[in-house]
Image 1 (cartoon, helix red, strand yellow):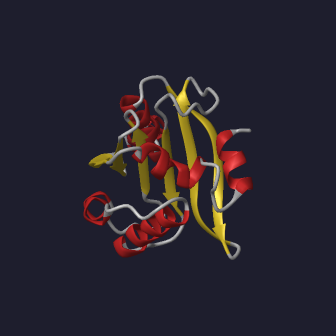
Image 2 (cartoon, one colour):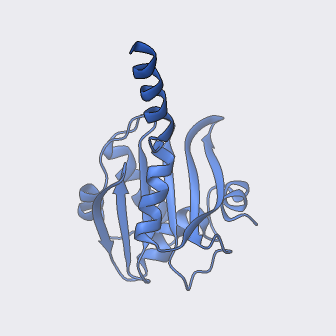
Length: 169
């Protein structure tokens, strides 16, 4: 009986969805046909901050005219304040400040190592967010897709090598 119970436990563990697979399923539900296009790890002063995955329909090359998703898996603990302020600073650095602090405070919670955020565009003016597979909010602002997603895959990112790896180019 003990051997049977152990085998059953092993089978259940082997067939349980892994967190990355579960998040991929969220990406596919939010963006039908989503497949991973590329992955990259962002480092600051040599310390890894997060691993990113770019989801495009069919794993195709990034096309700003199509919806796509970016998932961040955090490799460090960060506060809600850290996430919101970093995003606001990147908006300012890459163009102009955006009046989105209140929306960002709704979207972002503190993260611990291993937590995941998925952002999926819905047209030019909306980006939906999921934290660990649970929908948190939708940012709505003119051209928010370009402004938010551009932080990671735009022309003026903090790391060109990160962007090249993420976009698979």
